Amino acid sequence: RDGIGRGDWKLAAAIGAWLGYSDLLSALFIAFLTGAIVGTAILMGNRGDRRTLIPFGPFLAIGGIIVVFFGPNLLNWYLGWLIHGA
Image (cartoon, rainbow, N blue to C red):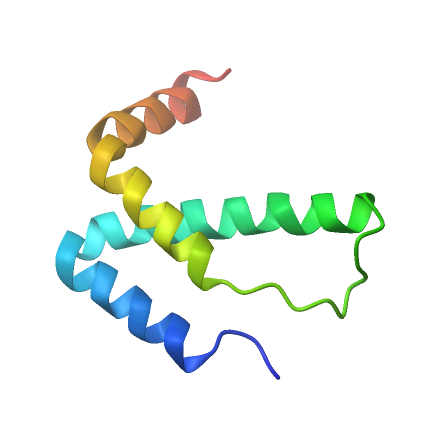
C-alpha cells in the first residue's frame, strides 16, 4: 500500500469542511508532526522498521481536535515563537 489512503483524504476533507482552509492546514501540520513523533518512537523503540504501516487517520483526528480547542491560541503562540525565536 502506498502513502495516504482514500479514508485519510475523506477525513481530511471533512475536517477542512468543518474547520475551514486555514485551520485545515494547522490540523494537517499537527497530524504530520504527531505522526512523525510516533513513527520515530516506534523506530527507536525497535517496535518496527521503515516498512511498518502506521494508520494516519488517528493523527488527523488528533490534529483536528487540537485545532478545535486551541486553534487561535496555538497559531499565535507558534507565530510568536517563529518570529521572536525560542
